[in-house]
Image 1: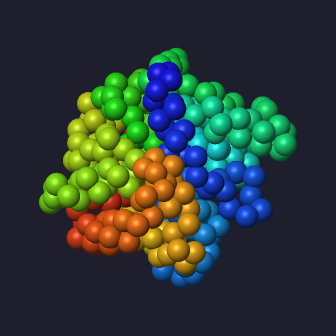
Image 2 (image 1 turned 90 degrees about the vertical axis):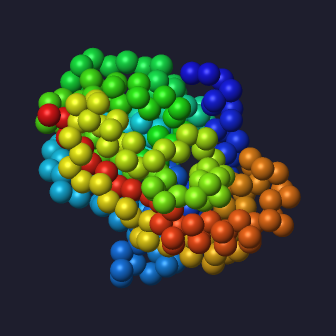
Length: 274
Ligand SMILES: C[S@@+](CC[C@H](N)C(=O)[O-])C[C@H]1O[C@@H](n2cnc3c(N)ncnc32)[C@H](O)[C@@H]1O
């Protein structure tokens, strides 16, 4: 792991993402179904996981790799609800410390293993995992070609790669691309079509790719508006300085405009190894 990459990301994720009464945080956009009230953030986090695994027949004991596991929300969901054996990897030491605390508190040592590393520096045996997940983590990873190659190797035949990712659309303007990079703290956003190419190059067959921007990023904005974007301010302030507060309304207005015009967005994807 390069220390600079971890340090840089630690600044972005300095903001407190934890919800009241929770010992872990979901560091993703959430998913609001048509009947999910805007204030129901916990339901939105739960929906997100259900939507990610929709149509997948997960069995107890199956092995999962969670790339960029954050503080372990998805790992816990897969281990506690579905009895899976999860390997979580994250580049930020504080995130992994958090996962390890939760593993100890809930006695999940035989179900979850959490490692602090850059995923690009790791290797696993061929066909090690039934599923590999990457939830909103790949936009931080510069060498996606190598990453997808590794994923193709690490998955079993018939295994699935489940990911959610922010990506640019064909009609994305220069300004929308800049805003997307700024809001996601990423210099490595890609065109959505490029993901299909990465998958194919890695021997993975895209089964389902859907744009979930209206149910996720746009709703998350409405949810965030309720307390004056406190979390967003912490998150953007951590990387860009407190001065961002003055410019935030215009940034947000332009960003929401670019999302509504579908210049970029969040996608849920599922691909199977042939
Ligand atoms: C938006 S957060 C998502 C966290 C988690 N997947 C979730 O849904 O709650 C992205 C995570 O990816 C991690 N990450 C970024 N680059 C990484 C890398 N090269 N190797 C491992 N983890 C990485 C970050 O540290 C961060 O925790």
